[in-house]
Image 1 (tube, one colour):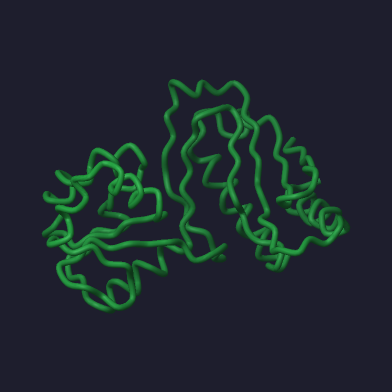
Image 2 (cartoon, helix red, strand yellow; image 1 turned 90 degrees about the vertical axis):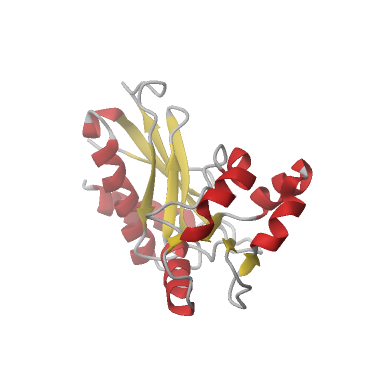
Length: 209
């Protein structure tokens, strides 16, 4: 049975479970095999067809912007305090920045943003002109992005919310699955199996061969 059919059946089963008082997240778990995590340091971004949720985004910009939490150069000095800096990095999912400020940002925030994988990057967040249009476009782009960082032989990522339609959830899962296949050295051979679950349910297993 092909994966899409299995996903359809698995989602039907998951939806039979007891209703919860919140919008559960749909988790996709990909269990790996014949894959050396130490040798293959995979770290990349996937753009999903359907947004899961609005991400928390902050901007290092020259002037305050009403559409985004802004940190201006005048405020940089207060982040010389390690605790404040760590709190800032932990409070947001993504950071965007005006290109001209990047050297200063690297000096002031790099030691925390870098290891957290949140440094503004050319493909996701460095703006040549930090105008309304660019900021709005980059926010929309970031909201549809999923970060994948493989640290162990099992990858668990959010693929959607319970309130989304099955069709949207399947499209998101297939987008993640196909993107992963491209990154794995042995393609399908590196995947042992796939599981999907809502936050509070037991997982449904899918066979991939």
